[in-house]
Length: 66
Image (tube, rainbow, N blue to C red):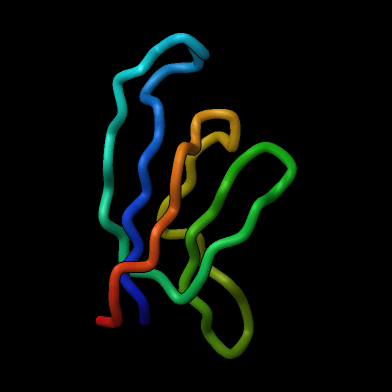
């Protein structure tokens, strides 16, 4: 499992310069139609552990392994 730092805007306002940062343990991340999803992977499926609307994401950075 990897550790990711996700920086995103807490609101939909494009001019909002404030940012929130979350550190999340996940196996990977993907971009769905409406959101960015961090997930853990099991033999049969991927389980979402964190998601945020893709219009709010500012940065995703892998910061290490767990």
